[in-house]
Length: 212
Image 1 (cartoon, one colour):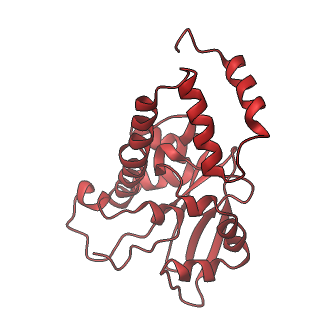
Image 2: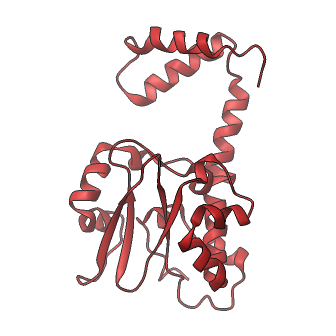
């Protein structure tokens, strides 16, 4: 850690600005970022690199690799469903954001959907940065009240008899969906399979079965 970093000073700045920042979350974040940059407490280039890494490289690509491994290795799949945190650690993806992780599997009769009703708890080390809609009040409320309708808006149409399980992600227990493997992919290796996996499929708002 930078020896010049003063956590108490940062906390004091945050308290001072809290009542003066605009109500929109994005504007509040931008205002706080600008102040921290101005005070020399944050390097904007480093911040941009961190966001890009978790958005494009570290996050969803890691999750896709986990899903692909589970599709081709039944023993790994069993370990993933039994203890997701330990399973992702096997692949070198251990970290605070992947701790307390539970994988739930889509089947022909059950579809899983992840939501966070109280905040934006999200295993970003595995799924990348949370999309804006995931943190929106409308998604958080309707995913619990009308999950079938929400899925339909994402283009996921399920049979009437398919059960939808909605999982509430928290700081103590985060979820990722293990989607069903697309038909016609038996000859594909892990790298090719991982390229088919979307972030939304690992949240439950995408259906990969017919994409290959």
